[in-house]
Length: 112
Length: 112
Image (tube, rainbow over all chains, first blue to last red; front, side):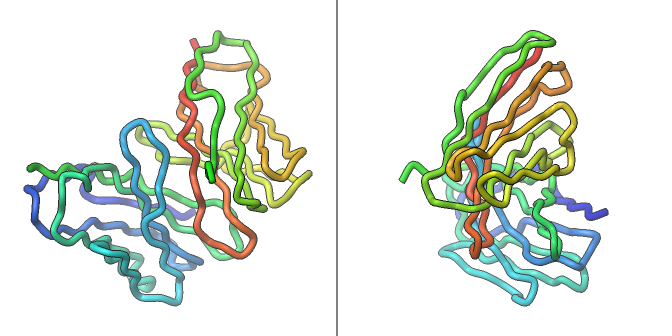
């Protein structure tokens, strides 16, 4: 059974810092991995999707990497801003499956 | 484009009552999903649909029924609500060829 873990559960950093969020998964037979952002009381917004054959994806100040063999992904946020404060979720989709398996999320706070 | 919308935003039910949650998408997506989000459990897939007239069970289907009579709508029904169904419910959709799932804003349900 696929399990997805995100550490730390919460992170607080000062504005302007570069930071890394971690995601690990137990079954390397994944089809893709997706990073989402969730603001309090809101839905999920897709940030980046990495195919199993890819090593990384970039969008603006965000960079996501994937190491399938070790079961790890990282989300790098450069020059953090208070507006980046949210919960970040990673989710994996297994080959041949429909469902996404989500981690518990990392609650990120950027302090001005 | 409104994307994925959900009705209602919030509802309080008494144990044993029934209700239907409505999800609508205007992106002409084939796939639609219902998830529930609970503290400490993350998001879990309840039911999904791969096209109009089709439905399938997800990870936690018990106590729920779904219908997809129109391509743009996916309904989630609770026939006899239980306190264990207190949760935040999210609908998502994706296209046949796309891999990104797009989420609605959620419905907060409280069962007393």
